[in-house]
Length: 214
Image 1 (cartoon, rainbow, N blue to C red):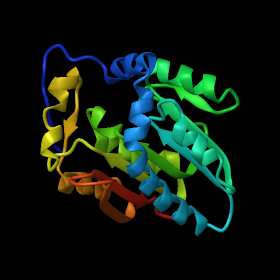
Image 2 (image 1 turned 180 degrees about the vertical axis):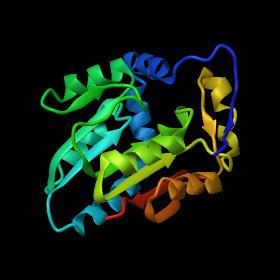
Image 3 (image 1 turned 120 degrees about the horizontal axis):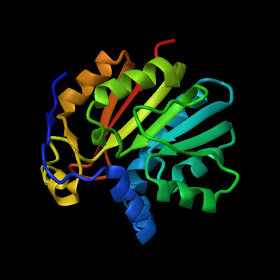
């Protein structure tokens, strides 16, 4: 699938930018800003995992300082929660806050987890990749248990006009897709029962969720 990727010279890796933000303490503002949308995402995902009738394993892709991982780990039926992030300072902070937690510093799409998960959540990550559609396919093929759910939120998408200059403002690559292109990517990746909604305001976070076929 062809994407409308913003092309720039002088582009920094997004993980470097977010590592700087962790050092500056801006991760706390990110947590507050994303909390309403992530709350909706978790409510949806936890409702679906409850239907399993057993304990579940979860991962947060782009976990930052680990705040979502800690929420997941505190859930009564969560047997394991872990997070992965490419920004080293974010992972260092997560480990300082939660020394017993499971946090990985690694780059996507190269890294793969050791096990599979019943719930995968990811907020504000996939559009930093040059091929988010391929990452979705990898989630479905090798990260999720059959019947497991992925719930992904993005604030940078074509219909969110105020976000379209973010690549230039932040100085990082962002792959700009429309809502229809995102849904096409989920279908091509093989997800079933795909649902989408706008979370936390107008135009809001574009949330897309899908189930790995059983």
